[in-house]
Length: 112
Image 1 (spheres, one colour):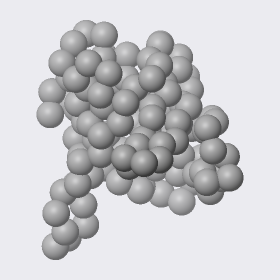
Image 2 (cartoon, rainbow, N blue to C red):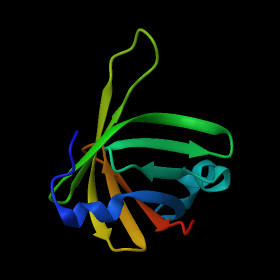
Image 3 (cartoon, rainbow, N blue to C red):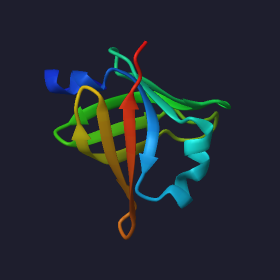
Image 4 (cartoon, rainbow, N blue to C red):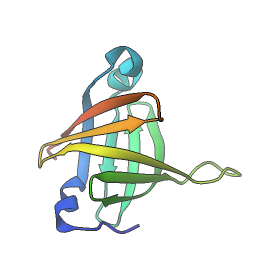
């Protein structure tokens, strides 16, 4: 997967989940310290205090962020598609939708 524009290069780095539009549904992710790390080679890792949750490739097309989960042995790759509501140098908000329901996840860029 290849990032489509220089603007999307703002995604490269580590992002920590700091808030959500539905804390009661995402409480475990908030407590576990969910972190997304986007690399320049268009790979990503989703991790928490418990270890790696998923990893694979990513790309951004306009306001849509695609993340491919490499999956577990004997399972197909899955592609997550989410809308980037806000992207600045310090903040990322994505909306995950399943057709009839949605949730916003707010991330803050981690300084290394």
